[in-house]
Structure formats: C-alpha cells, structure tokens
Length: 192
Image (cartoon, one colour):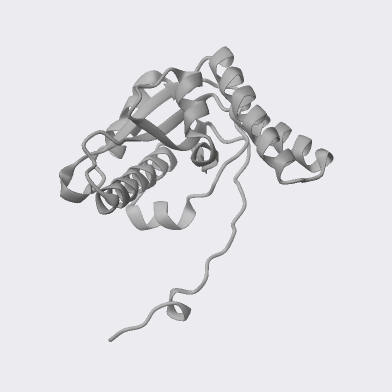
C-alpha cells in the first residue's frame, strides 16, 4: 500500500477478531514508530505492550475506577458513567494487543521541551497507526491515559519518568470502521 492510500483509507478500528497479533509484527510496528521525527532528536517515546488478558483487565479496571471517581465528582449521571466505563473496558479488554505510548520526562528542562516531547510522541503514534494499517491490522488511538497517567504507571509498573500519553488498541479488524469525513483542507488553509 502506498503512503497516500494508507493516509486516505486508515480508520479508527474499535472491534477486532480474537486472532492474536504476532510479536514480530508488533515489533515491526514499534520499529516504524521510532522512525518518527523527533524534535532535537530526543526520541522521548517509550512503549509498553500488553497482550495478556489479566493485565488488560487490570488496567481497564483501574482506569475505570478513576474515571468513575472523576465523573462522580463532576456530578455526572451514574448511568452515563457506567455506560462510558463499560464501553472503555470492552475496548481495552477485547483488543488482542495494546501499545501504551509514553514519553520519558527525564531530562526535559522546560515547558518547551515538554511540548516538543509530546509532539514527538504524537508523531510516533501516527507512524504506528499507519504501519498497523499497512500491515492489515486495525488500530485505535485512545487518549484516556492523559486523564490518569499515574494510574497507568502504577497498574503497569512503569518507570517513574514514563508518562502515558495514549493507548493504541491493535488487532485484526472485525469491521471496516467508520469514515468520519474530513474538513476540506482548502477551508482551513491560507497561502501567503
């Protein structure tokens, strides 16, 4: 698949078959992720791969507890909270593999370096998503760890300087995903 085809046909896939993703294929995706551009070549991205059901359930449960507590504090309706927690848990636990994309905060000197690290991690995520699509896999970027990086770090026993940025669910697609449409670039672009 050429790059432009991959860019135009990639979709967020939220449902997968139960076929496991081979470790060597996950390694290829991670290799592709590390070829992303990195500001100042800091390469701040870090990855935690989860393939066991017990670890996926533990992570989903711990994140669900935090989500519930936060939403109750915001006085959200209990039914809505329970529905969101159940949907999130299902997405996490039903994916054959999860890649938690983190950034290493070690050595980041100021606000600008932190922003550059976040941008670099996002570039790695894009490479990962495109590589998964090109390999015939589905993937979905979940930003939930941004709301509870401490919970993710503790549940996965990550190093202290790893801040979780995203969960990328990976698997063989059970459907084609939805075409969400895009704003025509001409509506949001200015040439000077």
